[in-house]
Image (cartoon, rainbow, N blue to C red; front, side, top):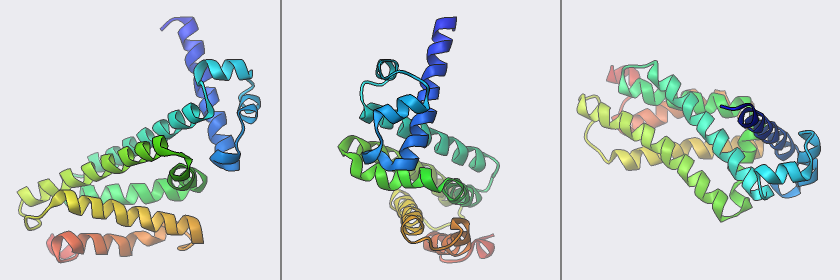
Length: 203
């Protein structure tokens, strides 16, 4: 990478970091390009060189945040060999990630939903990617005889839907006080849904 390319990459990342700060502080609708430019110590012209609009900047930020979340989930899953334990690790990591970054969770799951069709499409891609990870775990569990044959795609969508609802409720009401506190009950319910028993009994 040339020095010019390196500077451009650094400037772009600085803009994304500033955008995250401004968007999480003000929300997508109320955030202004001027605020992001000031926060990144960049001119508006410099910002528009990298991102032609606020929408493009938010989409890039949404893409980065989604990719980072999926990477963290995949890393947590890779530490487990048992397929159900991998699914359990994915659940735990999502709750941990959102629980530790409430403003980012609100930006991704609430602000992005009302920001327009392109953002809804990007969120659907995140939902589908997470559900696909869970479906692969369930496919492996079926193949190993750990759970009965079933529609693993539908079950995975139900897993993600349950997690998404719990996170949204936490964002809107503050309950539970710590998002991670929902993990034990949610884990039991989701495992029972695919096994008919707790994970301890399956093992």
